[in-house]
Image (cartoon, rainbow, N blue to C red; front, side, top):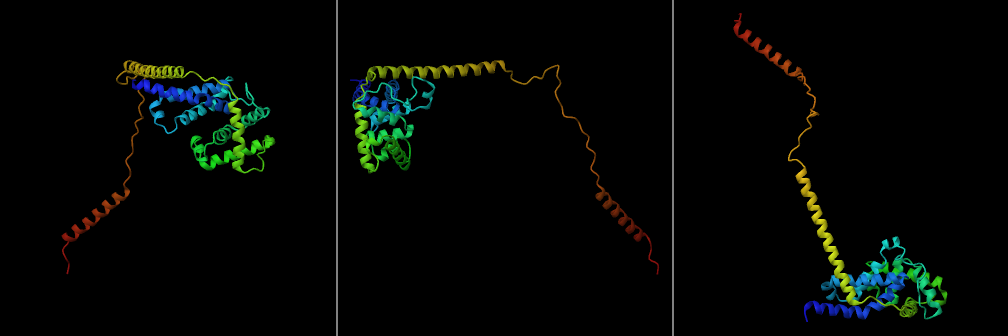
Length: 279
């Protein structure tokens, strides 16, 4: 088995073990099945493009999850109606009557609060690991988690979160979120199709980069040919020159006075030498 075949086999195994569950989790994050499938597919595509890095990562599934969550919560999805995160769940499959109310309450949370809650209470991650994945400090992650639980307790008093210890709140929410995610029937993209799509996307990106580089080089060459080597002024337009200003000599009155004084002293000395002493 070649090295590429070994990499493909390891990638397919990772996809088979985690793609379905990750799509269910991403659906709870977005409320849209289409966006959830697309986000997970994009996360695995990035993983295949950077497989040497992902293969040695301590948690390859976490690497893909972080990439999928980032794609799912990208702000530019708001410009596309089909990919915009939903305020109300689409195609929710409830196992219990209270599941839809829980999902609507989750989607009503701000995206950073919802993500922290799903990672910590839904997946059972530690606070430090949650903070590292959402790229926030541990106090900031704890604050988001606390505010999310408070909002859910206000909106869904039937959950029994009010007055409970934080550990007990986490247990209640984990049971509800896990059951809600497991009820969603999803069909992720085929692993081979993900790898093929990733390679085509990588090829298109490379060709686009090469094309832009060639276009820039061509534009530079054309500018070098068209532009003359030196500046030639227009024959019907004379060069602008600065007006010639004659500077008047600076008066030197102090120096002239000193010269006149020295001349007078020398004249008196000569007269003194020529005049005999009269006794």
